[in-house]
Length: 465
Image (cartoon, rainbow, N blue to C red; front, side, top):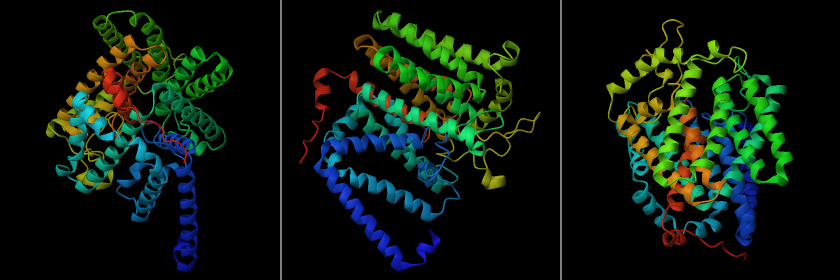
């Protein structure tokens, strides 16, 4: 690359060829709406694959395309410029389709502000977090990346049905399983961790959580799509095999919780909305207690069954320290991506958070809710919690009015969001958990709106030119 940059003539030729290719692709997509729609789905899947888990896919070129590159302190400007150029080019290629699909975006935004006010206020707080951060440049860049990813999630949520979203996730997870097994077996420097398999997701716990959701959603596909049960069975076995090799006990509990939830929903669906809501809340409370108790006493419960995992005992040594840090800036926190900054040395806000017994310095809170509060304070956390319960009410309402399996998917994702952020991070940021949370917020808001209003959200596909 450096040699090419040193040869202006060669660089001009390459740029010229690239521009011609881009224009040819744009012309093809502009003339064929079906091709443009398929290209949009492929690019959406590509983006979701890039941000999978809490830190994204850990293989090239996805590490260079992850939006976190935009606010990493050691990222070079040429890398930032290249990433922005790639994303702007992709938007340009889809612009002929976006002219149609974005016609109703103003109505969608207004609906979200009115019907989902807490998440709207939350994103507003995030947008301005650079003003109170000690590293305003990083916080501003991070906020822009967070808002940008959330904007893509809003578009995906409003554009696709639950059936299409489930299909999208299934194929992303299928590719992730295959890549992860390959890297774990043949490139262990990337696909393995001291604890166990990490696949392409950087850490065994995050990898195992993703495999748990993969196994459950493909299981649901097997239940409701008999013609593809063989394929579903293969993916389920591969996901469970990968989960077992990740050595994460919490992820095994997660599989049980999500499957139990699904069969429980068949009973809840028949109840009046009020009782259905109470039943779901009780299930979540029991599940939270279960995963905490099992994680905290994992070795004494089943040393050889669930496998060893980092217990809550280690986490509870530094969680009080993190809460003290939040209380030092209680209202709005430290700003986006502005707390865990080890490169700042003595100026790092998290420098003195340490487990004294083991001298372990955590790279994050090992709790998504605490990490969120560090960035946007108790105000931000309160807005998120209110948003979560708002979505929970909508999800129960949708469950009682729609048909399975689509009707139960929002509650599966909400439960997954809670369970995976009790002992790990990834709730807020450019992560797949956050992305899907925004998607389900948008989808639920539209699906529980009045029928007349729902009709205004539908955009007819443009015919091929």
